[in-house]
Image (cartoon, rainbow, N blue to C red; front, side, top):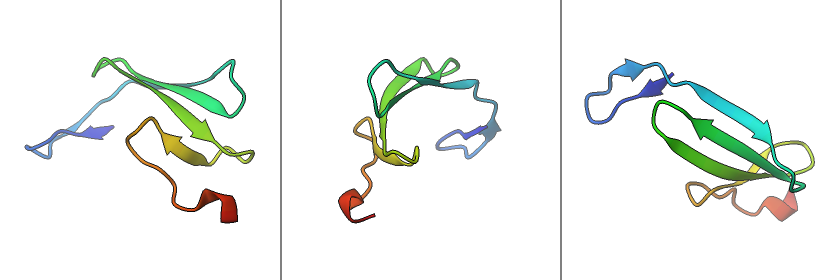
Length: 62
C-alpha cells in the first residue's frame, strides 16, 4: 500500500525486496511506480541507508 500525494488516497503498490549479490545490500523494486533502490542494511537486516532517501543516524553506536 502507498499514500498518493497530494490527494492522500491509499493505493496498491506492488513491491519486491530482494537480496543483492553485494553483502549488506538489498534491492527494492516498486513496479507500479517504476522505482528501484539499493538499500544498505546492518547484520540484523535493519536499514542503514535507503538509497539517498533516508539515512539512519549514528548507526555505528547501535
